[in-house]
Image 1 (tube, rainbow, N blue to C red):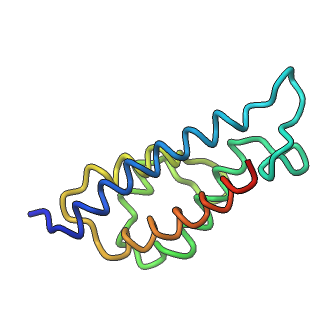
Image 2 (cartoon, rainbow, N blue to C red):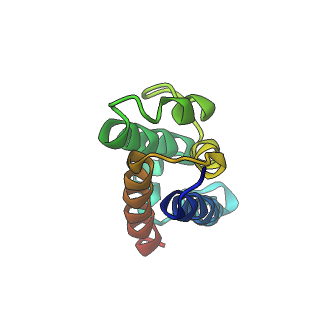
Length: 119
């Protein structure tokens, strides 16, 4: 059964997925050159940054194992692979999100706000 808090967290996951997609689209380099935004420091690829962000979220919010199935759905492998969109999709579909999921979404929201400021 979905609680109001879980419903709010699921809606937040959907909103954050949209924000991530906008950030990725803005970061695409024009004419083959690096993006001049904060994400473009050292000509870092979006995929590499995405893995760094997933590593941060996993380390900070998912070490107790409560979110393992969501990270598994995202194809997460520490420092190697994963999809932030798939993680958010998994969270958005969960009818009974844990408090840890809400904390993760709050942390991701703060990270995305910081990145948006660089654009």
